Image (cartoon, rainbow, N blue to C red; front, side, top):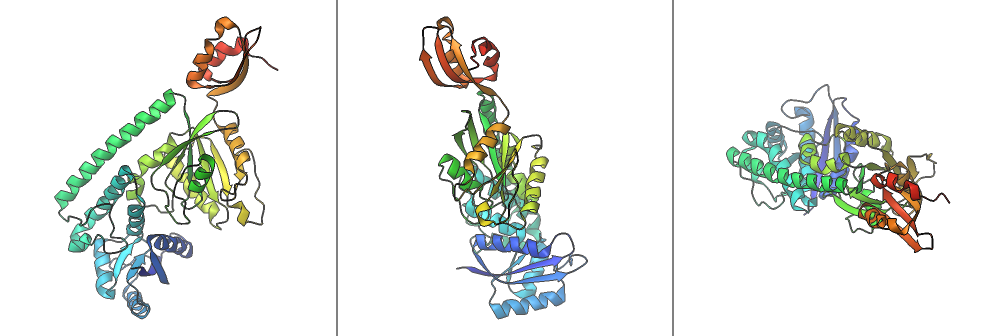
Length: 407
């Protein structure tokens, strides 16, 4: 049964309440809730007991009864005592922004690692709230904000939860270590990686599917992709690039989630190039782009070359300028993709170079060395030697320079 929700925020001047509620509305829709109404109260500070104060809470109770609301969603993080006080005053179930995002993540997680990350984030969020909420924390399966990947009831014993947190953390460290080995192997094998990053719902998965023929879930919903997907493509200069899709970013992403999904986002920090996908049809796209770039900087990825893909340009009448690192595209309509690939190739650090060689027959063995970390596009056996069109790893370029043809 679809939840019927009232969205509530207290405007204390930290951010634009209308924009934030628009985002909360998208989150609610993604989780499967119908928005009935919005309530904004301008305040100097959050009420310590109920966030919005007794008078406004009475209005919310009357509004909920009149509209038949089954859920109140607050656009801030609530304490356990605040949740209990609001529920007692309104007789309606209450969740906050973090619980809503956790719920979406719980629905979206597919891989074992994704499910472990979600459960860990949920437990870390719930642990300090146990004393205040008591048995209400075992409502898993009872609606939005209560789902969990696999468990039927949340054990409310603190020691049990801490043990579970320790176990999950150990399993995730092991998986992270394995991924670290994979990254080290890619570096050793000179495999270059491009991370597709951007705000949630900007079109990252649609672009990955278009470029690689992958079958990644691409929906017009927030956090459609949770588990990272990697696929290889060939660039116009012949180099191969492993593209990695990453979890979408969002303003005020709760620190529980940043920490839990750091390993996923670290794929971007270890990349050779970042493809930053922006939805330019979104009036807020400039602000959202800043959120993405700040998160990348926080991960230590600010030195990595960035190519910006201005997606959904087919929806706009106004013109956006392009330059050496910015490309207008429509992933849905397959527009601007050839230029995007050219710009990626131009900005991707050179670990190899395309060369035309004339190798004497006694040096023909160099072709097998080239193939190890590069590519041989063509080879022709002539009277003078082997004529070859190759992509050579940097480590071989000096050795091959004597045999390079300039024509």
